[in-house]
Image (tube, rainbow, N blue to C red):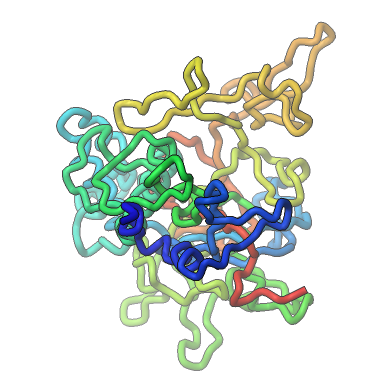
Length: 485
């Protein structure tokens, strides 16, 4: 009896069907069989399209005018309109809620709380952001993050670094659940310290877990194997959206497009140029949670205009044409980009982004991936200048200041350094991160997707939250929406 025959999980059903029919797909380059142990066992996995991760919505990419769509009343001149194209991607349907974030902190306390309690403490939101020297907001300090009445409200008091840590944690939890669902791993609620599922560590062969049924390995020299990225089972990383992605998703021009024509110019994430609903059923009601005017946070008793004094539950108000909630109002949101006033003039016109620091996994002298750190994570380091010296597309790891003075040399060939050094000539430096969208504290001007502000990545406020995004691999639309060419 072949000992491999009973080791196939659900994820390998397609492979089993191919083998059982004794009809192998052949290589168009060599004519050797794929998925055939007798031919060496190179595997070609039947793949349809990317699975949509929990909480995400597919945003079909395209071209749009990025930047100012409203009069620049603050006269910052930092969002000059320009044409850009964004590849298809996924983004959260809503902002991350208090309950979702508490789930994260609870997991950190359960796994690291005994030996590394500082890990969970570092992740906690700053509830003191609610304090105001001339207002009584102490109830929010004590209750907003933890009380169940606010569980579906967006989490605030989270800085940019904490938001990125949440995205990394979510990647691992989602991929772990996928492997459990596919029958490859067993549930292991007793994970402690470095013995926790990490996607990078698993792919690097540095995490075993409670194996239920490994994949059959068609390599004739092996019996079983772990899941590889080539299997298409694991999802890409959750991350913050780029500024271009967030703005494109907020504008949702898909609802205004007929063939290749955008018939109406959206000012906000909804159709029209008004902040009140024109539909007969909800006529006159506010379409977002924002500050209508000085001292008017929610309107008059008996007819509250946005039904929210501070934030509102993440599923409040109507979604935009991509199906995304609160892309205007409620809370402003962190995005990945480093802030520069003139980024729109510098960045590429495809997947525009400023903030790249290219890294690689840390390896030992023999080229093997280094051991995990004490928290079970594979470590990364910046690419060295020597490693990048022969490349044409970049010459160093840190490209945050590229084209804004960071790459200028003096007469002796020495770097002049970034023009953006906080405390010397500007408040902007390489830790200034872009903030998009309006909040419950903002006037209607900030509801337009083109507006942009910045905040240091270590700071947090009571009006700022975040949502996650994910890359779309393969077809921009999938088999359900694509056209044959």
